[in-house]
Image (cartoon, chains in turn orange, green):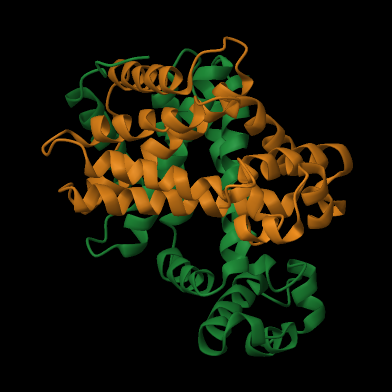
Length: 197
Length: 197
């Protein structure tokens, strides 16, 4: 926010993730995060409401990117393609700079704390609801919109885990595309269920 | 558990859901639930650990039904069919007796309480993880197993909401089959993404 503190936000995030990993999320204070980043507590609070927000602030950007991608898509695109475009657009966030390493640190912190896991699930559920609304506003009828959005979130979850794993070092956008291809392959090989009550 | 208390478990559930709806989940005590059901607190605690468990106890049965359906499927079934069979098998629970009305009451209670919503999301996430493991144990390789399980959970979520809505009074099993048909239709009409990084 201030020209005397270049990339304060990023430095605070890196400092927080490093400290959470070293000492456990519960034990770390905002004062320590600010000190590690070489900044003041006041600066911390200009960027984040509390130490938890450092972990979840990114989900607002995720949501905005998803919604912008849907809003910017040509009208008449089939729902699954629209969702595929939106999920792949998240690559712009995930595939930038050192995001994968920071995301891994973040995930390790969350995996150790049930309260943070709940928070993550709530954020994902909201993302799914926002995607449903966006698809609906883009002209997809409600029943198809919720199915497509939930399918999109399913592909997102799988892609995110694969990207974090990242042995193959493939980009998020590439992994998202591959997961949608797998989905198509899976559903085309299956036949409609025979027994229906 | 005792022959002098026929259907004590069901009576306690009905009493709890009625009271949660009338007075708010937070305000209701176990003593009140037991009294409304015409049973003792001791009987309550023979069936449920606390008043929250009345709402979430069913998820163990959901999970068992899903896993049994996967384990009992013929080997070599494509992943999406396997998942379709498993989700449709939940109809045995949802389509029994007055389940839909009780499920609606339960959902209304959960929708009013953020802590219960978080709990519900945690239960669903565990269900998805258990389904992934079951598919893997049934011979599906890990990457396909997690995608198929997440797709299954997506269809489950959509089906559950439609079943609760239930204007059309269609059974859960029927709605699940229809949602998988929609998924097939959606993915077959889409074309692979053109741009891949």
